[in-house]
Length: 162
Image (cartoon, rainbow, N blue to C red; front, side):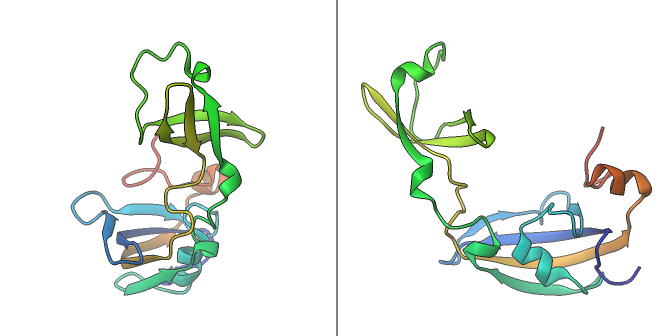
């Protein structure tokens, strides 16, 4: 398999920047990212841009919020009584993350404000509403194994380990 199509295992290095050009993360000094193409394992805008590319290709991809982590949803910001955190034995501080139960199942929330009575949490992904830029270097493209296809993710180095 020479180009990226559905069911390909793609191994790549990436560097992620926000709209101001600040580097947010990179795989360059660690293991490359391996994912199963066409299975929603990476954000849609990046997956679309990689379609048809091959090992050895390098590209810069701009991803609008709608094709990334979505628009910010103010309804996901809530003030909750401090009593909801009873049994938590640490001082609650801005920036802490907790898993909360929502109508859509478990969701990750970030503490954005703390008062004596109330704690404000934000259920938006920290990159929601942001235009993102990825520098990509495609290292390898191969066919997925039957087990990887059955499980919907990559196994082995750079992927999922059971």
